[in-house]
Structures are given as structure tokens and as C-alpha cells.
Length: 145
Ligand SMILES: CC(C)(COP(=O)(O)OP(=O)(O)OC[C@H]1O[C@@H](n2cnc3c(N)ncnc32)[C@H](O)[C@@H]1OP(=O)(O)O)[C@@H](O)C(=O)NCCC(=O)NCCS
Image (cartoon, rainbow, N blue to C red; front, side):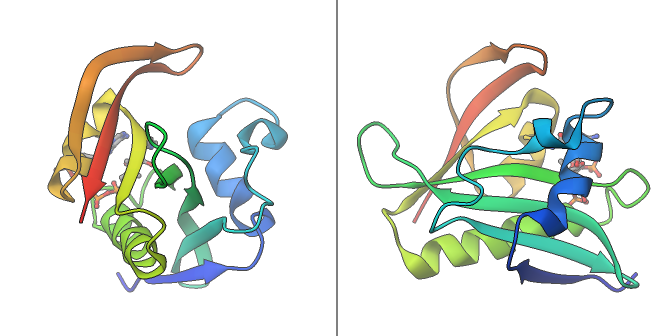
């Protein structure tokens, strides 16, 4: 499978995939993040045979009062998972985070099921597992460089 990961100029291009994976059964608008349209938001997509099959986003976001960046909206369509697509998206976001260097840390709230996926990419868990209403258990994870 040939996968290309590229940055998109507008969140609109990835919203469908993000909504289908992360907010199934809800209106697409429910998948919007408040920072999506702000300066500094970076959105990447994974393309297979001309179709967007995965996405992820990066935002400037403080971590314990420090300048830092946050990854949100990691999603790969069912049928394309466990083939490395998510890892390529995550690496593209980490690369961009390091390149622009807002702080030296990226954080995210990982769904418990996805924790091993982020650990393989060098993220470490911080603190206790907590629940996000309507979504389920999560753990804060960070990546430093
Ligand atoms: C998490 C996710 C983005 C990873 O994408 P991917 O293309 O499957 O990632 P890779 O192929 O690089 O890595 C696969 C690993 O992701 C994790 N993974 C696979 N399916 C998953 C799922 N449904 N939910 C969470 N994690 C999953 C597993 O650790 C898997 O390892 P394995 O193949 O050895 O079981 C993708 O599985 C997904 O969209 N899951 C549903 C939504 C989600 O949980 N998003 C993350 C929110 S924090």
C-alpha cells in the first residue's frame, strides 16, 4: 500500500475522516476543535490512491504554563489501520512540532486503547487515567526533545 502524508491548507479537507472515526454517529460539526481555524494549527492527512484515509492535527497549546504543542484528532479509517498509516501521521506531526519549536514538548490525551501506539512513538504517560465524558478513559501523554 502506498501512502502519502501531506499537510492540508484547511481543516475542512480532513473533517469528514476525523468525524467518521472519532465521532461516529454525530454531526460532522461535533468533530471540530476550537483551535482548528486559528493561526498555528497544522493539519495533515494520509492519502491512499487519491483518498484521504487518515488525519491528525497539531496546535500550539500550553502544558503546565509552559509553551508547548498539542496533537489532537488522530484518526485512520477502519480497513486502513495497523498498516503503519497512523505512525506516519504521528511522525509528520512530531517533525513539524520539532521544526517550529514552540516549546520542546508535545502533549496529547490518548484513548487508553491507543496508548501502546503512542508509546512506540516515544510518548510517555503522565498521571492517572481519567474519563472524558462520552468518549471514555484517557491518559495524558508527552513527548519531549
Ligand atoms: C490510533 C490510530 C490513529 C492508529 O492508526 P494506525 O494506522 O492503526 O496505526 P499504526 O498502523 O501505525 O499502528 C497500529 C497500532 O495502533 C493501535 N490501534 C490499532 N487499532 C486501534 C484502534 N481501533 N483504536 C486505538 N488504537 C488502535 C494499536 O496499538 C496498533 O498496534 P497493532 O497493529 O500492533 O495492534 C487508529 O487506529 C485509529 O484511528 N483508531 C481509532 C481512533 C483513535 O483511537 N484515535 C486516537 C485517539 S487518541
